Length: 250
Image 1 (cartoon, rainbow, N blue to C red):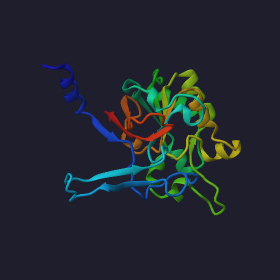
Image 2 (cartoon, rainbow, N blue to C red):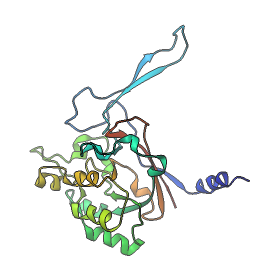
Image 3 (cartoon, helix red, strand yellow):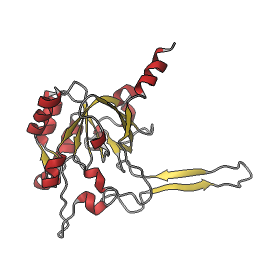
């Protein structure tokens, strides 16, 4: 009997939940990225080639595309990039903080320290090295970019996100390892507009922490007790990369 094989059998008795969006050439991405930056599944070697009868494709995309992981060097010069992280750095205890009902009332909702403390009062303390995910149910707007951005008639964005104070709490008081969310940015749109910058994202990455943006299906994961696994192509020097992310949950 092999222990890990038996452990895998046990793990498969739990629910495995996909937390990343599927991508294609019509998938939305940040408006600041130049047009033409996405070209998926372009054929470069076609069926019927006398050298070898097979199909090979090329894939062109920005690092921050779809569900993606951001590395510190994305916002902080000369900080860690993709090659810094080992496989052991990409599996975490998962804590899902649910503010979805508040977001229904206010799409500009900003997650607070009190939201985190309410979570802890119900489920226990956030453990060292946790991945703290903010559930807003905003993922249900994918892939409608206008809905994801919450754009009003004047073009102003309205979507929920983190407050700087909440992030400082999970990192400085609780020693979390990473955070994630379903919206396009770490910062709630109201926070970014007031600051004139993505101050929450800049803070996370300046702390040499990781984040995953544009998650999905957090409503299908237990608030506490699950494990999250983040994977991405092993490309060196990347500030961010599309990620395949899943949870194993009770």
